[in-house]
Length: 323
Image (cartoon, rainbow, N blue to C red; front, side, top):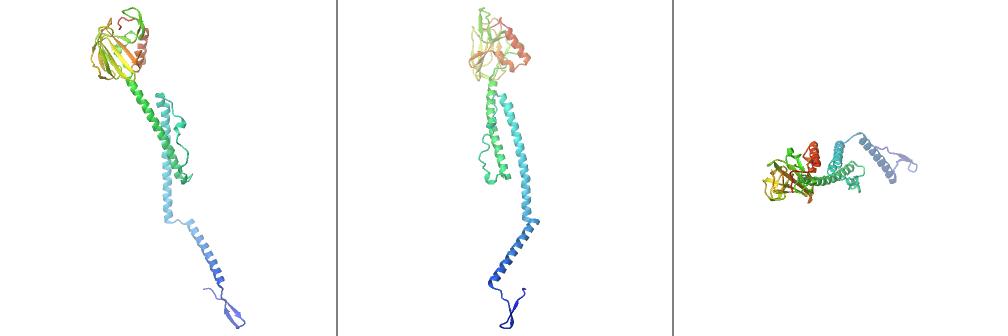
């Protein structure tokens, strides 16, 4: 209890208690409250600095767990970015080279990356903003790579379709393939004895030797004649390719029939204007006759192809040829 103060009153000749004024009481109360509040703040701060509440302890544990998840996410993003870079290199240096198309430029690959930061409201340097920004960049690059693969797939399908239509399979067995009696180009006609353009290749072979279709296709037409090409057949392969087989002894397919590469279509004969059993074989590319020998490279070994090519180049005159 606060001690009472007294003073001597000479008028009354007695001691009287000192009474504080209202203003003094208010001032003292304010000073007391101020120092009490300051002391309370100091105690709270000291407690917060040296003691952790259960709620804070829980929040700190959750925060630490989130940081560990963040590092896991960052590592996965880096791994995905590395994998994407590898796919981009394969795209540019392998697939596009094989399909004879230009690689994507850095500008095309980075299209849509950057610009306005839509995560600015989360803070420029916050973990969540940085992570979301990296994920968006990775997603944009993946979309571009997917479009690139779709484009390459389209080119590959076209190339595969053209490859299936290319007359690469020899029309006779390798045993008879080197027996070229008349090459493609100018040659001395065996009957008329004048130089004339020979628009196919003649393969000399015994009667009834099997003849095979050079690529997938269908029978466009079959004709039988005692002159010219004799019994001959035209195969439609698609993509501008057609093949014609002449002087056949027997035809074992029908008009409109679907054929698979290497399927037997008939046998070697001596029909029409022919001096000996042989197969006259022609290849059409976009309506123009071309040298059939050039297409055998895909089905023969380098040595076999070189032998056939040399035989075709050295052969000038024929004993068994078509008209």
